[in-house]
Length: 173
Image (cartoon, rainbow, N blue to C red):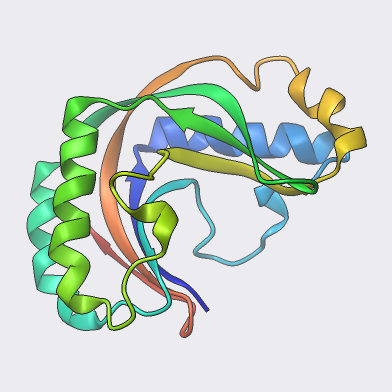
């Protein structure tokens, strides 16, 4: 199971994104709200890997001091081929890109098999996932939900390490 380092939103932004999840659910569409795990919450993945060693924790605690960091939740995105992942772009800023690059570099020695290619600083698209497994015939319904694509201004308020094997997270900040 994958491991990751993720940015967490402030309470207001998280609530707004959970509202988007609920809109999709209420429309009978796939949604991240269907994941019932206690640790399921809107986030932005900075680093993904097959394994991230817990020795990274001291390093990550230092990065949490760079928060809060302003963010804008922007346009809707589709990833992959059908079925699609529906996400919201996190508008890249110099501070966000610098934080991502620094976290990725600092995590390197703690990734026994390296990072997944999509989290490399030269390939990374900052986003937060709204739904997975969206079928082509559901696209129109999803993309026309009122308010789903409205820009939202908020902050990143926390950093976490997700251990997908143990299904636990450790939150910094």
